[in-house]
Length: 267
Image (cartoon, rainbow, N blue to C red):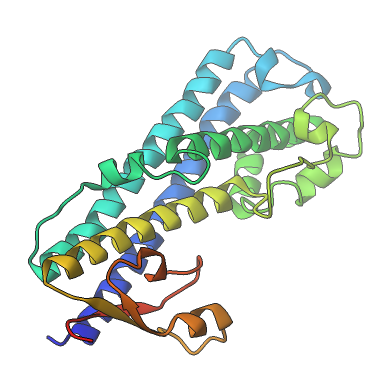
């Protein structure tokens, strides 16, 4: 099989891993939300006083969040390993680092586990606001769960929240701030942030394995090709030859990038 065809197959498999991670993550977040709803609806607080930290079950609630963090990390490792192994098997080379080792070293200002915890805590605030809102307007738990599942990426722009937020005396943190929080960046939804992090980790692990494979088969560099016709000046600027040690030149260059590479053995 020629290298270009192989590269496309490996790209498609990496994208499949990212998609499967995202789908499983969504279902896991919904499952965690259901657990939090049980604790929320069984509490003795009035709707306006509702906050997770005021409940007698706050330790159990915190465990739901901790378990979610651990599950996310394990899933990142699972799908990163699959993506890396596909590269290693395709080029018949040695696997120089495991996905878990790579992810434990993965740091851009914060470690991967720290980022997971940050986004999971945001999910906790989102869930608190959802539950408090539903209690304030008298929605049953089954309706709340259905609404959450349908609007999971819009935690502060849905009919339940928009009705409840009118009452400024609510105690839930994100109801008091009307859904606003400073310093969280563009991805307001915790699910979107966790998806984006997962995709980045899986893609970077895949990138690491490709560089390793190219070096082991004796490549001097790699050629970058566009994987789509979608206009992107960044991707256009990276097309062409790069030295084997130019790790930053290895795609993907952004979260929707589908550029790919082939090894080059002579200048």
